[in-house]
Length: 80
Image 1 (cartoon, one colour):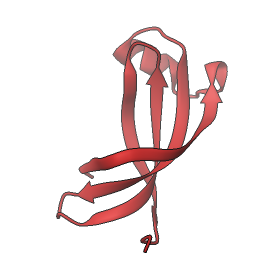
Image 2 (cartoon, one colour):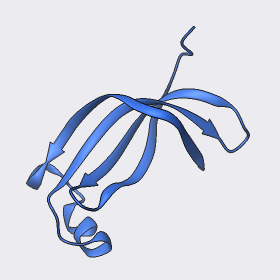
Image 3 (cartoon, one colour):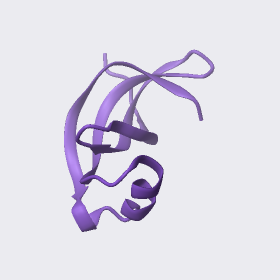
């Protein structure tokens, strides 16, 4: 599903580092050998149909390579 992050990602937490990142070998092949971390956070996103929703996102990140492979894990209730 296509989506665009609107604004900043907040409440960022590290889920896994080093050998704890299960997809580490695939990440090395695709993006390069680095110290990968898996993170999660909350952000407002814009879906392909134009709707803006709040969602929990997961992604991989490595120093010098940046954030890769964002995925929506859960849509959250709208904040008022």
